[in-house]
Amino acid sequence: MTFRPAVIVLAAGKGTRFRHADHKLAQGLGPYSVLGTTLRHAIGSQLPVVVVVSEPLAELARRSIASRDVIVVPEVGTPGRDGLGMGYSIAMGVAARADAAGWLILPGDMPLVRPSTLIAVARELTQHPVVCAHYKGRRGHPVGFAAELYSELALLRGDDGARRIVARYPALSLELDDPGVLVDVDTESDLERLREELETAPVPLSDA
Image 1 (spheres, rainbow, N blue to C red):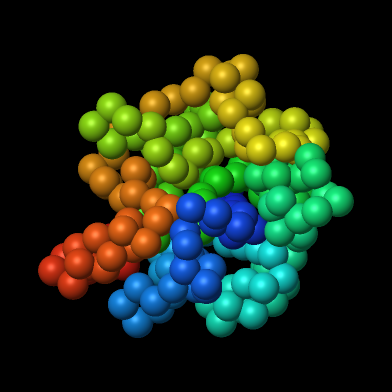
Image 2: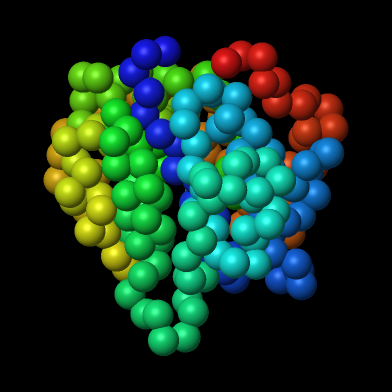
């Protein structure tokens, strides 16, 4: 597609609900990690991809994506860096692709989002300032933002992400046949359930 918003994959959170010693995004999921699978699907959309990570996950990200597209920020919750949060990660990712035709925000712990879903959200940004992926009436990710919202996105800080921007502008609720827009990995049980599902029904990359 000639209209090419960038996909901003967020991977700088601590994942405090996941009790395993290793970060949830580094956990194995089939032949890849959770983060690696998310990035693989994002790359499969053929849109530009940037991943915003903390230092402990930077090398993991570089296994899937070029170093120039890995933006390293302080881990969310780092002592002495209060106020950064998810909003800061979004701002840094958007600023790294300031010339993009818009931005799709995708959490790194959502490895089932299909490439075709990312493309569908991106296309709607030609007509709408904000586009939210839905499945059976429930809002999920990615959330897309048109280029006209750059100034507001680049100033984000705190833990609310871009919720206030979504609330401020008319948002398209884009209904998609992709249950993956609702599936994230917060806990060990989430991961085990996801592994079992993928054993029987792998997520295809060919739908891009």
